[in-house]
Structure formats: C-alpha cells, structure tokens
Image (cartoon, rainbow, N blue to C red; front, side):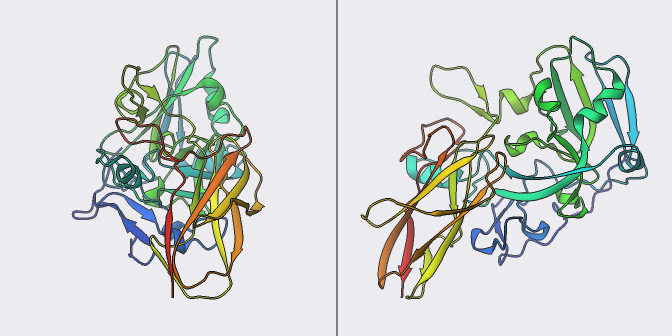
Length: 352
C-alpha cells in the first residue's frame, strides 16, 4: 500500500486557534471546550492525535487483510467490499485520549510528564458509521483458540493495539468508514478506522490495513511501554476504559460578563454511564446539575446549571459520578506517564 505524503504538512485539516488547541507537537490538536456546539463534535474541530504525519491513502489501492493464528483462513477486503458486502450500522460514541489533561496533572503534581501536553481538549464525540468488526472476522473463520484481535494502522509507526476477542465481537465495536455523516476525513482514519466503545482513543486505530487474530496474548509497544499505568512496585497495567471526569464549556481561565447565564459541560465515564454531576461555586455547597443526556455508556453526557455570579474572581468546581458510585477525586493517583487525570478541577472565572 503506497502512502503519498505532502512535504511540510503533518495533518490535513486546518487547525485554527479559534477552534483548536495546538499541543505543540505539530501532530496533535485538541478541541477548544468553549467551541463545542452540540452533542456531536464537528469534524472540523474534533481532536487529532497522531503518532506520525497523516498518511494519504488511495482507496482504490487499499486493502484490509484479516489473518493470524486465531482464524482458519486469511481474508482480504477492498474499500468497495466494505461499503457493499456488509450491512452498515451507526453508533454515537466518545473518544478520549488517555493522556487528556496531562498538563493539568503536571500542575497538580508539580512536575512535568513526558508525552503530549494536553489541556482539556483531547476528547470528542461523533456518529460513526461502518461495519461491525465481528462481521469482518466471521468469514475468516474464528478458531476456538482465538483470544485477541489487533488492528494495525498504515501510518509510519504502524500503530496497533490488541483487544480481547469479546470486545472485538461486541456489536458496537466498528470498523468505521464515515464520521458525522461524512466520509471519514484523512486525519481521522480514512479509509477505515476502528471504534472501540468506551476504551481509550489509542485503541481506535486509524488507517487500518491489517487485523491480526491471535491465539495468544499480544505484547506491543502500545500496551507495554505506552498507554499503560506505571506505578512504583507494580507491573505496568494497560489502560482500557478511562475514568469519570467533567469538561466545562468555558475557556481556562474564563472571563464572563455579569448577569444570569447557563454554565454547560459534558461528563464522560468510559464504558460506564454518568449517574450524576454536581457543581460548587467558591466555598459554597455542592449542588446537583441538570443532566441532559444521553444516558448511555461509551458516550458523554451533557449537563448544565444556572448561575448569576457577582462581579469578581470565582472558582467553579464540577464533579461527575459514574453508575457505580465512583466520583471524581480531589487528586489523581500518580502514575509515571501522566495518564487518566480526572481530578476535580478548580476552574478560575473572572466576572466583569
């Protein structure tokens, strides 16, 4: 499969500061939280996480191969096969990079972590349309020994990450061909990417060209050296679902005019549902915010509360709780790579 690169361009779509936050790598751009217009994140402002420049792939030459010790035969699919041989389904799902809020984690700990210095914008929600992954695996003939499924990308780094067979066969694990009703954009995985419901964004491999079905657990850099929780005295733990956290749809810091307003945001709990969101102004009591849904796992929930602030400096705190009663903590347990930060954030707001 030939990759056509354009010199000097690491990503394809425009990334204007009015919509996107530059993470400083030339490859990675977060969504500005105050530029989220609805439940779905538009393609033009959906966050971009790349390990290498966006490849330009020709769908006429592209093929997808399913192979490995866990199937009876290798199967190849063309781009047209995916569109015309299989029923297409659409699901709304949220993707979040496990390193989201790493820069805020660093401020909390008083030290810098390696990795992309994300603020709050490495999260987004889209309607993904494509073929359930299980429909693509079935013609290859899964053996009784199959245990893991690993999509592999066609980017320079050949990004890849295994998942258990049960997760691969879940009805909402897709090989996506479209995003928000449009053909998948290049920066988001054209011609095909995986969407793994509720899991970290690194599992949603882009530009997929190969899917390995294995009869043994697979160890690759993306589940041994990176995208793992490393704590003293413990083995590295691969990250799957991300923990419950809130996103306030205001700049950081925020400057507001005085007068009544609605403060809005989103809460996400990975594979779990969001059960409640509470807010606190300065040193006041915690109060319940209104949840606007959807009440689903794998999708962020929108919330809001009314506020008529007095002029001056304020601190707004918002805390989400998942369906198992687990709230956001005041501090996130330290891990060496700065992943899964979900502390309650003291959001500074100046009211004129």
